[in-house]
Every structure is written in structure tokens, then in C-alpha cells.
Amino acid sequence: DGESGGGRRQPRVCNPTRGLVDSDAESSEDGQVGRGRIGSSTAGRRVTTMQDIGTDQDPEVDEWRRDLVARCPDGRADLPSAFSKAAIGAAALRQLPPESSVGGRAIFDDKGRVNICLLLGAYHQLRKIPEECQSVDARHIGWLARTACALGLALEGELRRGRVNKARVDEAPADREERCLFIAAESCLRFPTRPNAQKPKAAEERGGELFSDGEDDVEKFVRRKQAVLSLRARVASRKQQIKSHSSHNVDMHRVKQGLLAPSLSFDMPKRPDGEHASDDEDQLEVDKPVGGQESWRGLLKAKLQRDVSKTLAKDLHVAGRAAE
Image 1 (tube, rainbow, N blue to C red):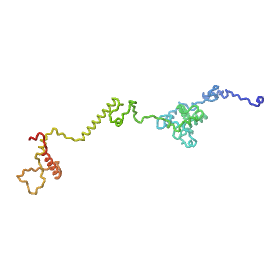
Image 2 (image 1 turned 30 degrees about the vertical axis):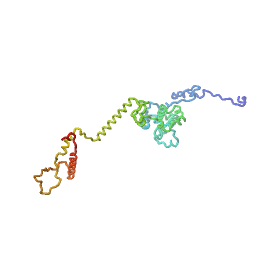
Image 3 (image 1 turned 60 degrees about the horizontal axis):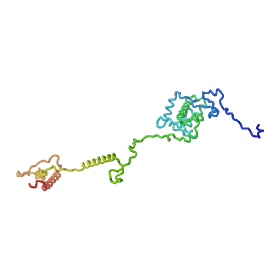
Image 4 (image 1 turned 90 degrees about the vertical axis):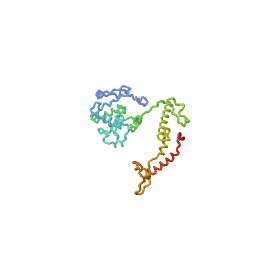
């Protein structure tokens, strides 16, 4: 037929049912082998889900969960923050410490977080070795893979392929904490009582006026009350600084008599030894008062001040006593 057709080969017809699983043994393996329909995206493909390695009923699940929470930064129980999608190169992979491996397969990065790229690769390798899927480390990797898939950090197709889609790797930042937005108020929030209220103008802008036309009665009353209180406080403080003496109820005649009345004085000059005052002298000697000046100079100064006051009091004119 090829020669009769002018040397051209006939186009090859593909069997649409080729590749379907016909073996009963394969179709019953773990109950997870599916038969694809003609034209469907899963045709000719063995579907294996992430339930192949371990289950959520493993006795070590609680311990694995506590370990994952401990890997969250800042101690917060945010499981997505314990994962990282940053791509790790070969040089960085060789420098990872032994603690980054689970069962001989690197899972964690240098910060202790679960790296999605390394996790998918280890999960894909374990699926090819069924005899190792029952170990504790393998079940731990399977649980981490299911957790990442449940949190939306990995897709089931990525688990089957063992790698993250290139578009998702390019979009993922090197550190997931950089795209985390935490909204918290640094101080108490204050909401405006009147959004459309105008701010009071300064005194210079108002031309020296206390109130502006844009303010309502409530604002005017509040500002007037504050101004009155501030003026009262200023007057009270100034009264304390001013020392005033009232004399409208004082009898000035009696004041003059009190100033000019005779008073006891001290013997300022010292008498020679053996000399005493004569009996004819009408004088009285008194001792220095307790609490008085400590020196004779101070006593003399006080006496001079009293003499000056008496001299000024003699010239004092008292109203109503002129006739006397």
C-alpha cells in the first residue's frame, strides 16, 4: 500500500484505548488505580494519591504536629509559616546540617522550616520504594506532604511529579514572612466625632477674634468655658505673688501713738568698771531678749530703724484729728 500511494506512508492511527489499565492485579493495587475515560485528562495514567505513605491515624501524629508548631517563627502557632517555598541550590543543599534530614532525605532548610521543594522530592522518591513507606521517617514525610497539601501550599499534581510548578516557584518569595501582613494598632485608635468639622483657625487668621463664624454653639461654649477657667487660674496665681496690706479699718491715730510711745531701750555705751547709774537717772536696765540679735551691731541697727520710724510718724497727718 505504501508503494501504490506514490511512495508516501499512510498516517498512523492511534488507538484511543491504548494505555488503559487492563490488568486486574494493577487495578486492585491499594484500591487507588483508576480507569480513565476516553478524552479525559486522566486517561492512560495511574492515579496515586497522597494517602500512599502513612495515614492521619498514625500514633506519632501528635508528636509531628508539636514539632511543626515549634518550627513556626516567633513561637506563634501558624502552621503555614513553618513551610518555605524558596528554591535551594546544590551548593546550599550540601551545606545543610544533618538535622535537616528525615530518614536520610533533606526536608528542612537552614532556618529549620519545611522546604516544599525538598519535601516533594523526598515524597516522590519514597513512592518508588514501597518497602520503605512503612518506616516512621517515611510516614513522617507523608504526613508533612498531606499537611502542606491541606494548607494549600502544594498541589496533588505536584506531589505526583515530585516538584513545584515553575510558575509557583517564581511567584513565591525567598522568605514567606516577608509577605505576611500583621495589622496591629500601636496605640489607642481615635475616631473623629465629626468628619466634616473644620479645625478652628488660629487667632492671627481670625483677626484677633475669639470665635469664628464656622464654629457652632457647642464649640463656642466649650472654648469660652476653657478661656474663663484659664483666666481664673492666672488671676489666682498672680494674687499669690502680690503682697498687699489693707488699711481701711485701721485707726491711724492709734498707730501714731504706738509709734511715738516710749519704749524700753538698751544701754548701748559701756560704763567704766565701778561706775553705776545715779539714783536721779530715770532709767531701767533690761537684759537682752531671748531670740534677739546675736551682736551689739544688730541691736544698734534695730534701734536706728525704730528712731527713723518715729521721726516719720511725727509728720504723719491723721484725717479727722487735725482739730486736736
